[in-house]
Image 1 (spheres, one colour):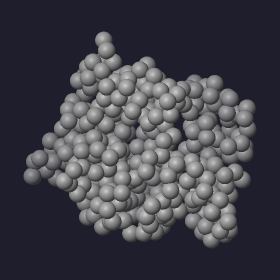
Image 2: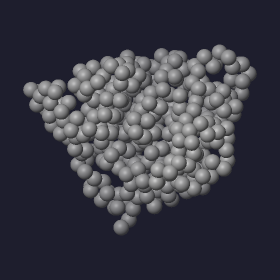
Image 3: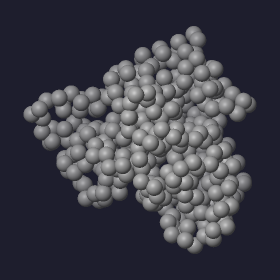
Image 4: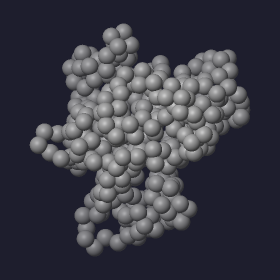
Length: 282
Length: 113
């Protein structure tokens, strides 16, 4: 079977949606659903519930150490935030962490993605966005296509890495040569299958360019900048050492206050260390 | 404070924040080990790609660093990333990375990220 066919077959065979997330999404459709009921669904997976509490108590949300129960987490940081943390944890569990290649592993890639999620959310806050719950998730999922490629086309992905080395090209160029499509498109196919919000689908597809024609898409621009920032800071590893310039139009869309990045440096590093410990190690 | 560092990016002299065990739970390196080249070899042999390194985070470090040191580090960053800041936002982005480089230098006595 050709690698691209194998890939598509792999995506088609993935679970439709991580179970807890699907049950949660169904429950929220019911206008009479109580916080206790939602908390009960999340708590049905104890390992996830424990991690959700730890993430909710990180300095990221400003309630450090004050949240003891899932009900409190929903009340303090909001249902959508809690649901997105559950979702991110569930997605990480869908894929194996064993599909490593020399100098490149899913764990390094998830660490990079968590770094991007954290910076994306900080950008959202910095530009005064009121609803930032999708920012963290969009950042975490932006490279999901690479995870799929590692999972279902592990051998071919070694060729991509070799091409990056030998031709000194970007991963996108190497992926196009080997698979005929890049990880952004592969990731978007999964997002489509999982019926993720259109904001997340667009981010996965357009995070390299950072802008979409005729749209003022703040999440796409934020993930684009956060991806570059995380690579420059060396948070995790996304497979190559190419540091592309930001798209100038992304800066125009975001209008981030000058000096903002230097002012959040300490918080970014602290939150990153705390979050990878919870999501990847413990 | 600690941060996850790829084995390839370990600088000799860095200090392990957490013990490293192999897939069978056997201890390979204890916490607080000062890493040497031979340790990197052990980690690679066991397929370990990253470890937790102790790191001091001090945001006031930029005030203590001389302008010439910052200018030199900035030149190196521009060379490494192969692009230069074009607007105040990009200068700010480089400033953030510079804070990290200077913090790493303070921790390890080296200039790499």
